[in-house]
Length: 120
Image 1 (cartoon, rainbow, N blue to C red):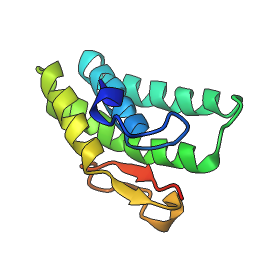
Image 2: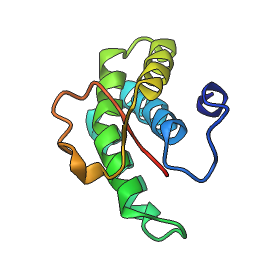
Image 3: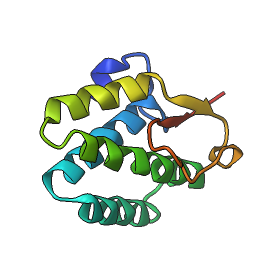
Image 4: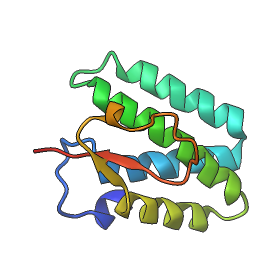
């Protein structure tokens, strides 16, 4: 679903596809379980990712920022998986492009948007 929404994006980027996919995954976990479970799974996913080839700190920071939004999307739309998916797609399309995640407030205080890494 996320890849189909962004057909011009390459597979090698931490980008709108990745941000949207994570949003849907975490949003549905928060809906299906609870905030704590979704947050623990997202954290475990990021820790596990560090051992994989191609891991990059900026991609992890992007995911950690976005995870806060993802969980909020799931909690705000608990009764509607379709709304979680459509909200995540919209957030992915509107994602703020950043060259380096630590150039923004990584606390994601409002939890209402996603970031994607801008690649040269």
